[in-house]
Amino acid sequence: MYETGKKKGTIRFQWDALNGTHTVSVAGDFNQWQPVSLRRQRGRFVAVLPVPGEGRYEYKFLVNGQWRLDPDNVSQTANPYGTLNSVAVLR
Image 1 (cartoon, one colour):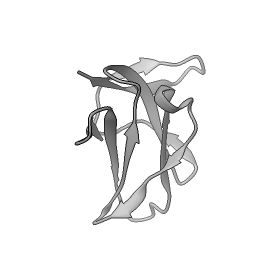
Image 2 (spheres, helix red, strand yellow):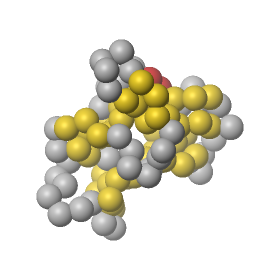
Image 3 (cartoon, rainbow, N blue to C red):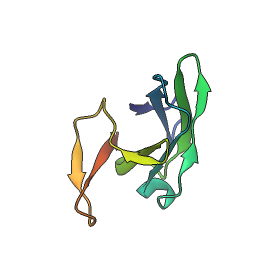
Image 4 (cartoon, rainbow, N blue to C red):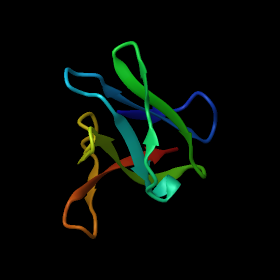
Protein backbone atom coordinates (compact mmCIF):
# COMPACT_ATOMS: atom_id res chain seq x y z
CA MET A 1 0.00 0.00 0.00
CA TYR A 2 1.14 3.54 -0.63
CA GLU A 3 -0.12 6.95 0.40
CA THR A 4 1.14 10.49 0.32
CA GLY A 5 3.49 11.05 3.25
CA LYS A 6 2.77 13.62 5.95
CA LYS A 7 5.78 15.60 4.75
CA LYS A 8 5.52 17.16 1.29
CA GLY A 9 7.49 15.25 -1.32
CA THR A 10 7.25 11.85 0.39
CA ILE A 11 5.43 8.57 -0.13
CA ARG A 12 4.58 6.20 2.72
CA PHE A 13 4.77 2.52 1.76
CA GLN A 14 3.51 -0.34 3.89
CA TRP A 15 3.20 -4.11 3.67
CA ASP A 16 1.26 -6.28 6.14
CA ALA A 17 3.54 -8.51 8.22
CA LEU A 18 1.86 -11.84 7.53
CA ASN A 19 3.19 -15.13 8.87
CA GLY A 20 6.45 -15.94 7.15
CA THR A 21 7.21 -12.36 6.08
CA HIS A 22 10.71 -11.60 7.31
CA THR A 23 12.07 -8.86 5.05
CA VAL A 24 10.36 -6.23 2.91
CA SER A 25 11.95 -3.58 0.70
CA VAL A 26 10.54 -1.21 -1.90
CA ALA A 27 12.15 0.05 -5.08
CA GLY A 28 10.95 2.24 -7.90
CA ASP A 29 11.81 4.76 -10.53
CA PHE A 30 11.85 7.42 -7.77
CA ASN A 31 15.05 5.85 -6.35
CA GLN A 32 16.63 4.27 -9.47
CA TRP A 33 15.21 0.85 -8.45
CA GLN A 34 17.54 0.53 -5.46
CA PRO A 35 15.66 -1.48 -2.77
CA VAL A 36 15.11 0.35 0.53
CA SER A 37 14.21 -1.72 3.60
CA LEU A 38 10.89 -1.19 5.33
CA ARG A 39 10.86 -1.26 9.16
CA ARG A 40 8.56 -3.53 11.10
CA GLN A 41 5.96 -1.53 13.07
CA ARG A 42 2.81 -2.86 14.73
CA GLY A 43 2.09 -5.78 12.44
CA ARG A 44 3.29 -4.17 9.22
CA PHE A 45 6.44 -3.05 7.47
CA VAL A 46 6.66 0.71 6.80
CA ALA A 47 8.93 3.22 5.04
CA VAL A 48 8.53 6.90 4.16
CA LEU A 49 10.64 7.85 1.16
CA PRO A 50 11.34 11.13 -0.63
CA VAL A 51 10.19 11.59 -4.22
CA PRO A 52 11.08 14.34 -6.69
CA GLY A 53 7.58 15.84 -6.55
CA GLU A 54 4.10 15.33 -7.94
CA GLY A 55 3.80 12.76 -10.69
CA ARG A 56 3.50 9.11 -11.59
CA TYR A 57 5.92 6.59 -10.09
CA GLU A 58 6.40 2.89 -10.78
CA TYR A 59 7.41 0.64 -7.91
CA LYS A 60 7.52 -2.93 -6.59
CA PHE A 61 8.03 -4.58 -3.22
CA LEU A 62 10.78 -7.11 -2.57
CA VAL A 63 9.31 -9.56 -0.03
CA ASN A 64 11.56 -12.32 1.31
CA GLY A 65 13.71 -11.89 -1.83
CA GLN A 66 10.79 -12.08 -4.31
CA TRP A 67 9.46 -9.15 -6.35
CA ARG A 68 5.77 -8.49 -5.59
CA LEU A 69 3.13 -6.08 -6.81
CA ASP A 70 1.34 -3.94 -4.26
CA PRO A 71 -1.72 -6.06 -3.36
CA ASP A 72 -3.64 -2.92 -2.30
CA ASN A 73 -3.08 -1.00 -5.55
CA VAL A 74 -4.91 -1.98 -8.74
CA SER A 75 -3.00 0.58 -10.82
CA GLN A 76 -0.33 -1.34 -12.74
CA THR A 77 1.73 -1.01 -15.91
CA ALA A 78 3.85 -3.36 -18.00
CA ASN A 79 7.62 -3.16 -17.62
CA PRO A 80 10.40 -4.10 -20.11
CA TYR A 81 10.90 -7.49 -18.40
CA GLY A 82 7.47 -8.85 -19.33
CA THR A 83 5.99 -8.40 -15.86
CA LEU A 84 4.04 -5.61 -14.17
CA ASN A 85 4.92 -2.73 -11.84
CA SER A 86 2.57 -0.99 -9.42
CA VAL A 87 1.89 2.71 -10.12
CA ALA A 88 1.65 5.49 -7.53
CA VAL A 89 0.25 8.88 -8.52
CA LEU A 90 0.99 11.92 -6.36
CA ARG A 91 -0.90 15.17 -6.80
